[in-house]
Image 1 (cartoon, helix red, strand yellow):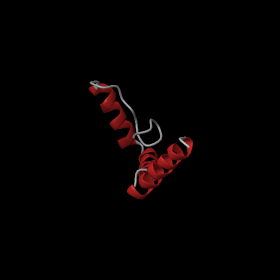
Image 2 (tube, rainbow, N blue to C red):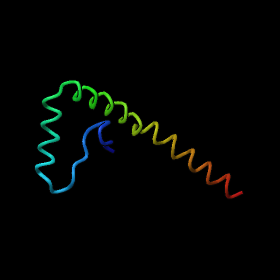
Image 3 (spheres, helix red, strand yellow):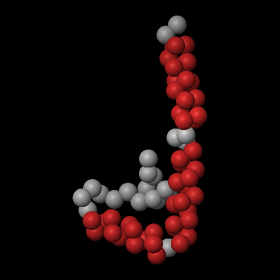
Image 4 (cartoon, helix red, strand yellow):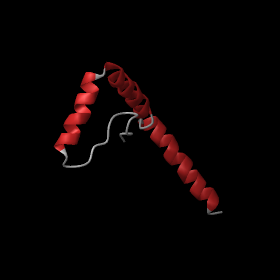
Length: 68
């Protein structure tokens, strides 16, 4: 769900140094923190149940129309 440099940082698994560096970047840059926070809130809206339900219904409709 996270988008690198948009809603946060993606760090390699099992790499505590990269994780610490990413955390420090966010903590030391308030503008970056605000950007990631705002983008994450917008991204979250894509996963609200009402949006997901509509997407699933549309997908089923496309499948049904394609099978006719």
